[in-house]
Amino acid sequence: MKAVVLAAGKGERLGTSLPKPLVRLLGRALVDRAIDALRKAGIKEIIVVYSDPRVREHLNGRVRLVHNEDVEREGGYSLLKGAEAAGGEPFVLVMADHIFDHMMVAKLLESKPETTTLCVDYSLKGRNLEEATKVQVDTEGWITDLGKELSSYNALDTGVFYCTPEVLQAARRFEGRFTVTDVMKHLAGRRRLRAFDATGYVWWDVDTREELRRAEEMLLRSLIKPVDGFVSRYINRRISLRISRRLVDTPVTPNAISIFSFLLGALAGGLFAYGYAALGGIMAQVSSIIDGCDGEIARLRGVASPYGAFLDSTLDRYADMLILLGIIATNPEELWLVGGLAMLGSYSISYTGSRAELFGLTFLNLTENLMKRDVRLFLIFLAGVANQLFGVLLLLAVLCNLVVLNRFIQFPKLVKGAKN
Image 1: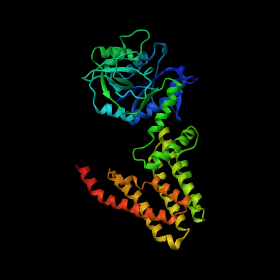
Image 2 (image 1 turned 90 degrees about the vertical axis):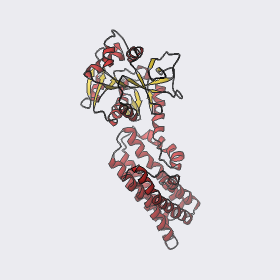
Image 3 (image 1 turned 90 degrees about the horizontal axis):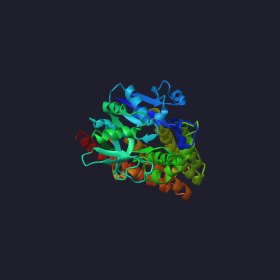
Image 4 (image 1 turned 60 degrees about the horizontal axis):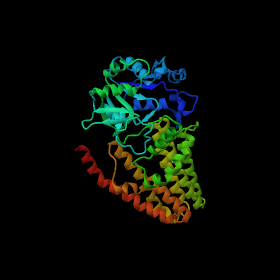
């Protein structure tokens, strides 16, 4: 499968001297985000239609480049150039100034469309309807009309298309200036444009400075993972996302942040050991917050890697053990047993989770959120400030090992469910 990216926009409404495809959004050029999403969707041959030589220089050697020598003919002409470069074969069409989830493209291709298809969003909430391209879809899934000025509509154009050779034929009918919407309206009028329901997937059209700001907010919100614990979701992410927003355009790497978070955790353990319980608790919580930034920045930059995840996970385990050892060191004779059980339970939560992942299984029981790392460190933070170290070790010893015991009970059921 091929993909065509339309990247000939000037970006005048964004108020920048850069061509629109090179405008940066949270550390990356818009066109790079589009290309990365297509590659994640499994598309290897990518054609980028450009007009500004700076776009060519930016992308040279990474994709197949096609020059739009007459940008005044607008996006429809870029579509024509891209469709011709695709050699009459079907292709995915996206815009360089649209942010979209790669899973939208993957699901579109999985549906094996037989005619030209547009991914539409039936949810109108939170969208700038003055700027959006509206779509009218009939009860059979055919698009009957689309355009920014539609008065009657029930969906929005996400800017992601599956194009058949009919698109090339339709684009060749136009002379002078014409848009992508003009081409698609031509197909819709002949009942040759279908809708694919992409409601719920992340997407955003970046036309103005305000839309760029809202796209930033949307991308940052998308970093909140469904598997996040209570503390991470409602406390840590509120802070870590703001930090990541500041760091994403700096040379700081995700791996450097992982190491820094570990050092903060080690410092927390040392503070506990030397009797500074309140400072130790605060430092443990700071380490927990910073620990979210490495993954956030890696995803924003598109540089997430197995090694980065491995490094982060390993250093987290070391930090956890050093913090607990520091607490035990405050009164070894009294705390060694309960502290040892807390360490075993804490480590075993991580270990059993990773072992289950090897079998493609995930523990989803309600108790799973009870003792996630963010919760454990938050409890240590509260205990350090309140100087209740025995109490927190006892709580961790009991609850962590109960979660692990519950996983032993869950595991056979998960295996059976996976086989079925």
